Length: 114
Length: 114
Image (cartoon, rainbow over all chains, first blue to last red; front, top):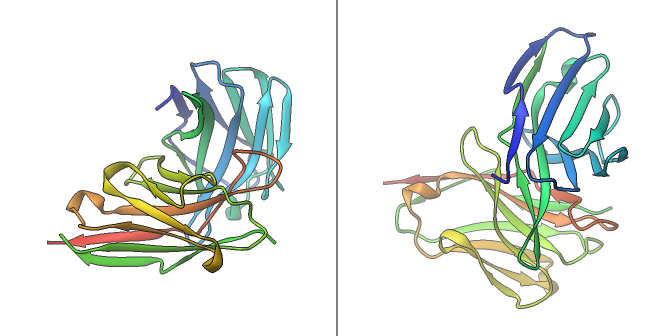
């Protein structure tokens, strides 16, 4: 699992409240990603990071912000949650395996916005 | 626009039968293509990937995929389905500008019947 931990695993919140999801890794990987998974859409990239304090937007970044103040943690924040942000959120890291770079995913966070 | 399309959101086969999961990509997508598998309540695992070497790519668990540029396809096959193959499968292509910024297809859920 490349040492990826997502928290919380499940979250129920109300529209308009702030929510922060945490991705923690233990193996000092440089690249980290946040995806959301929705039926009929596969996984879509929200934001990614290529180092401490270095982040960039993915294809569905509106309504989300991220922070990476240290290598091991990549936080995803919904400043004011909406029902359209109900989804399963996956964190991922990329890792060099031999001469090959692979993408490894966490177990996901199920977020429900009521 | 770059896109990856999976034909068929659900596929059902009998145990021992051929598995064929279809994936097509738009011509603007660079020819780095991937298949991932997701078991219930888990993250995604890499099955195999095409990176412009051999057009027939062998992956884990007996799966393989063939890259056909003329058909812009990267279909996933397995000669003989096993009950443990029941899962959701995602085809993905690399976005330009970054090795691991993947575009995912919507997914195909594979059911295997005794």
